[in-house]
Length: 96
Image 1 (cartoon, rainbow, N blue to C red):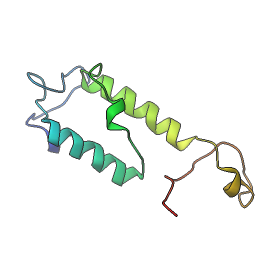
Image 2: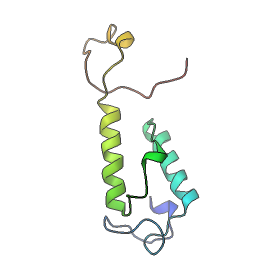
Image 3: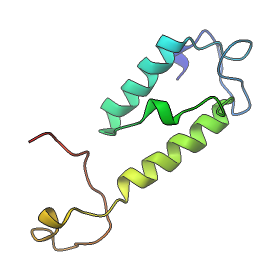
Image 4: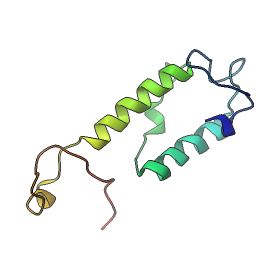
């Protein structure tokens, strides 16, 4: 996250916008897009609402989204070919 902000260091209690680490809205979206690409995730930026004020709150929300993405149920059409059918790691869905 540091490369997207003007801050020299980032701590859990730091405020994201304004007087905190002063991340701009475009930089914030770029940060989220980088996470999506690096970890092959889909993050709903709209779900990251104004209630998220600090780095720690953002981390908690993204961690929950990551856990949900990694442990989502395998679609039935893929479960037949996987010996561990059920809930496990599943990649981001791709367009047909």
